Image (cartoon, rainbow, N blue to C red; front, top):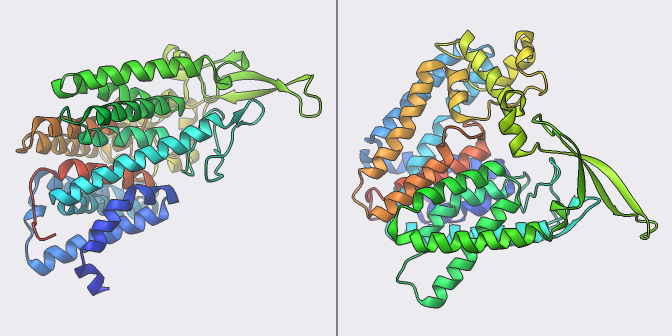
Length: 439
């Protein structure tokens, strides 16, 4: 084991393939994440070089971890809170480890190239699944035979969950680092086709938050002259492709709306398709889908997210200083009936579905302040670094896409989601400076 720790090429390899490891589910990424964090601690201890720990964002991250442990003493379910709060530190150290090992230019550039290849792979696989569709059963298997489970009208690609759009959005801007105005003409055209296709696939994935945050990032990137023309062309080509597919793919036009509300699966549609036993006859079935975006906007209070947020905020009002405890949102929601009135149309969710509201509800006002400070210090660290403006823009946009405050998100305690987010943050911090040229 010690020999493995001393051979850091193993860690570089694991960082290279980490995006592909995410496809396997939550267990393996979490194991690799934890081992990578341990290797960093071991390496810095052996070399007696602790300089990398002397960063403002890391100190704020450790403070957040200590606060999570503190509020666990006052949690409704101490066991749940202590378990998640104690092991939360692995995400902070993994960020540090990715930052450390990718501070080598060659390793970082290779990682970005692999992320780009990974994005192409996800786009091809998910695109295959998107066009592998029939009106009766919906989206069928991907290239590997994986069929989407859960909400009708969403694709999963090679993942076990409905997340290809979210993953592609998080890696989209990092991949853009490979684009340069100095590329040969045919490479520019190839890049234009690839990125336009990725944008389109994120739209086709049905993940509206992923597509909305992608558009937000593209809007910010528009102000960077080096990317302006490329972004305009990508937007035009992807818009044209989306227009053609929306008007030709049956998922967008083989149904009739029966009922449309803002509530969870509030869109009731009737699908029509040729009967299996007699193709000359038309069969139909009713299906519930995600509510239409316009319905959610018009009646957000009664939408699933509106009720989840309202429930979480009322939990915080009852526990302003320490919150209800880490990973206690679902426990409190299910066991304290006084919160039932805040989610009349929605069952208790596993978490508040927003980083900031989760920090507020589960760790109180101080936890919210420390969490927000962590995000701010991460961005400041990038902006104050001595790297070219293009990289600063891309890295900051990548963080904004993840931490934009008015979107629904995963939980900052769940291992798969935070493995992806921590990996991305580490990459964004990697170009600040070189910590060890011998890596």
